[in-house]
Image (cartoon, rainbow, N blue to C red):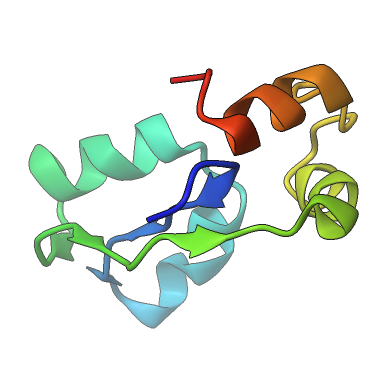
Length: 87
């Protein structure tokens, strides 16, 4: 895969009673993990999705979509990654 910025997804299927759906919607990931390991819910194994390269012109929007202000990768970081100098 070429250098630059990529988005990776990890997913976990969780099974719970329908009457617990509202509780689930308001829970943190830490609380959900507790329920599937020590509580009364069942989960499958985490699955990794294929990495997806993010074009520079879409990076700001992708970062904002996950609640980041978009400044994590400044333009210098991205340029260095694209040239292969970054991690």
